[in-house]
Image 1 (cartoon, rainbow, N blue to C red):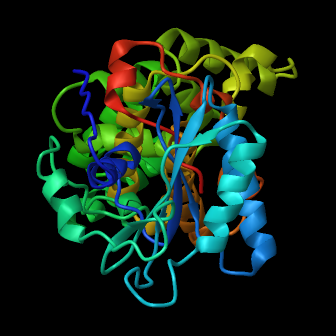
Image 2 (cartoon, rainbow, N blue to C red):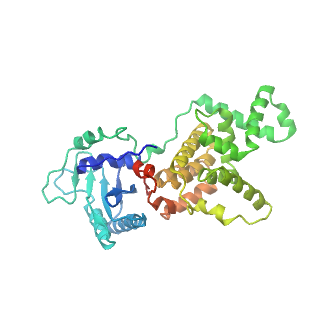
Image 3 (cartoon, one colour):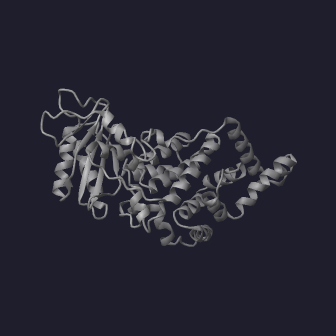
Length: 384
């Protein structure tokens, strides 16, 4: 990844960059951008409060607490994205929330470099003197035009929508998965398959003989995934023990996948599961390669989109964990909730929502990037 460093000369140009840090244009959100030595360390997003002052206090406490966990943070910029008018006569929206954020930042020794609000009609600065004229939205869009790749057009929820897949392709994968079930089931079921379909099912079964090799192929191969690979991944991701092998391998490397697969086999025979192999599942341990996680998430999204609805919870739960591992908790919740709408008892999806409801994020999303590429990419954590 080539580092991209863009200096901001105004509040409007800063606002043009926030969606790039979040990889979406937020709606009805509070975004807090932490800084260290004048360099942004990512961004955290939470929903705006729907209740009274107590909820605003809780949200402010949460986001400032999370900002303090990011290594070396010494300043913040809070930004409100609202559907309310900014240029009206009743004052800037969410003023009470920003006052709470500023107050808690001061208590924690964090400087507030700016405090901004973006509405459907204008943008403004909470720190400007009373009566200051709001800024024009065109100032943000003009600044965004000078940013590489332009402004992300998706909000924090639509960005989690699965890619479109042709209905005929979904039907083909569904039939292939059914044939794989028959090929692995009773011999007479396999014999009933037409020869051509049996050969296709056997190709999928051959991929299942070495799951770590399959998982590594999914995140390293160039070009599109063929249907047998999609079917093999779907088969694995709907089986908890193999799904966990995939997730831990994608968070590390193929050697880790081999080790987790051996540990899963030994665990089924009564051997305790090694703690060091389990820690990353709960967000503990070394920071995974962000690009590898993004590739794994896109792979899992494609698998989820390509399988029939009743076989989708497995890959959706993988999407949820992979989004969570990147700090994208809004997306993680979307995937988990969709899986539970299909299967209300789905295990990993239930666990993911419990983690998200508790405000838990992996420890590594609060680490300050150390490589120039990671610092330059402006990737950051996003809280639900």
